[in-house]
Image (cartoon, rainbow, N blue to C red; front, side, top):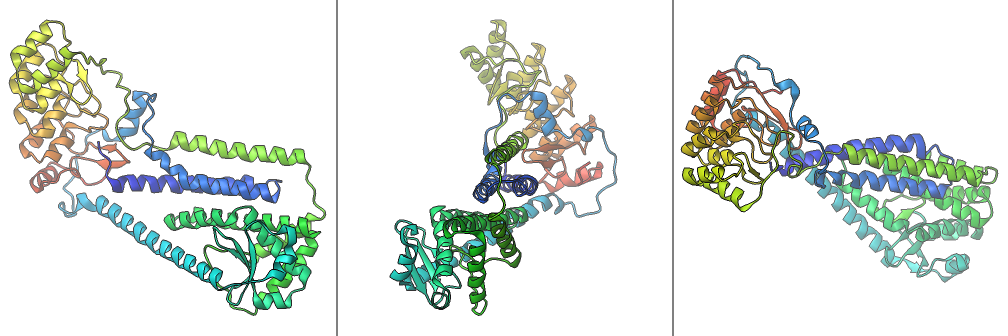
Amino acid sequence: MTVHWTQALATFALQHLWHSALLFALVTLVVTRSRLSAEARSWLLCAAFAIAAISPLLVLLPPARSAPAATVAADMVDASAVAPTVGRPMETKPHSAPSTTSALLNAAALLWLLGTTYALLQLLRGIASTTTLHRTSRRAPHLNALLGRDLPYNTTVALSDTASGPMVVGLFSPRILIPTHLAGTLAPTALRDLLLHEAAHIRRNDLWVAAAQRALLAVYWWNPFLHLLGKRLDLAREIACDTRAAAQGGSGRTYADSLLNGINSLLTTKRGNAPLAVAMSGSRSGLSQRIDNLLRLDTAHTAWATRLLWSALCVFALAAHISVTVAATPRLGTAPVRIMDDEPERDVSPQATRLINAAAEGDVAQVQQLINAGVSVDTNIRGDGTALISAARNGQLGTVDALIALGAQPDLQAIGDGNPLIAAARRGHLPVVERLVAAGADVNRIVPFDETPLINAARSGDVNTVAFLIDHGADVNLGVAADAGQWRSPFNQAHNPRVRDYLVQRGAINTRR
């Protein structure tokens, strides 16, 4: 079965949502409560954010070849849907109901696209803003000298009349911007502390990390858990740079004073936001946490063995999360290569191919000759199925009779090709359907990836075939969970109004049961 792009997108979104929710809980319980250094905590949060963003791509991997067939069947079939249900006709309009799910998926996909477009436009606006800041700033040699050897390679310090605070701009040619009024009011020691903080961002390549983070948040703008992870990452990044600056400046308390003096000077100016700039400004609660961390630096000491143990625990927790998501994430795409338990081994010999082709063409004489020569009547070739499936698919009634007489199993299935009754119902070959049912074919047989005979007959639009199957015991409400979890039933797969009306008359309901 081919997965519609909206179904694939819905599966991707759902996987991303629970992956990021689980990671956020993991970060809250383990990473942020661990006794790690600020540097290690920031990179672990960065890893968690990256995993949350890319792990849904697991749905695009091919299905595992080693998965047992029973597991495949369990994933595709709703076991609660095997008992017939006698219900009254639907009260809703039958012509519009089948498209409700599809319409909702399309609307959700459009909303996602519009939101992402808006967020990316905001990001581009931020790029333009930081480019302007970079271009209009003025080099300040005396501030470069204030950092001395602590100035990162290929970096300059510049004054800006429009920057809202100390910040770093420029991915390829980083520039530390200092507001002109701030450079004229802060003491040189406090100014140096703030410059050390911005220099730490450059050494850690935070501009590149922040740019990727903003782009991913633009794509997943609707996911609150990823935004919460992003906020924790932003704060951890600032605390890590505070710790580096304090270590170079002398003490945590001295740097905390410099930070508060800088914030106090900025309170009188209008604050802006440049998405691709890394700045020292932040929320009040974030600033409080930064100050608390700085005040603890001078007294708090954690043994290296404790930090190593916590680091190993955090890495193990992330690895366990990856293992869980790999195992629990469904795969989109084609059916697994592993055959069903009751499916015979496939014979791909030239004689087997000739048998399948002869059955499809209705060459009864050659079919009998090949089977009498030793070719198994139920030989199976992927993409064609068995000889009986091939004959039923092409409506070759005489060949169907011959194969049944020669011992072909009327219910033998082939993943990807259905079974004989499904193949005939899918094409609306009523005489073949009648013959197969007379031979004992199960009208309610569910084949993974190919649903049921009635679902396929309803999809084909042949009212007579639908009526025959129902008259011979087909459950009008028997459905399956197929592809990306979409519920499929005879009613919601029927596109012919006559078929839908007939199904309603026979008790079809447009709800999953």
